Image (cartoon, rainbow, N blue to C red; front, side, top):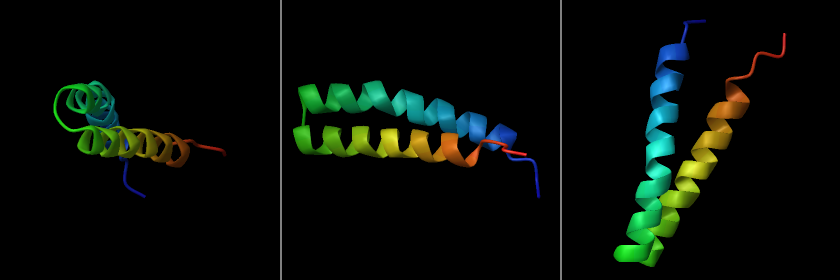
Length: 56
């Protein structure tokens, strides 16, 4: 299997940046869009964290 550590690192940076961006959008512009961004970021972070573990 190919080494995807670099891609995973960049994905984590994007997902962590999406958290405050979603909060700002939720507070300033649209609550629904901001909530969707926050939920997507949290689910993405959990997914990347779970699939990135090496249990072997």
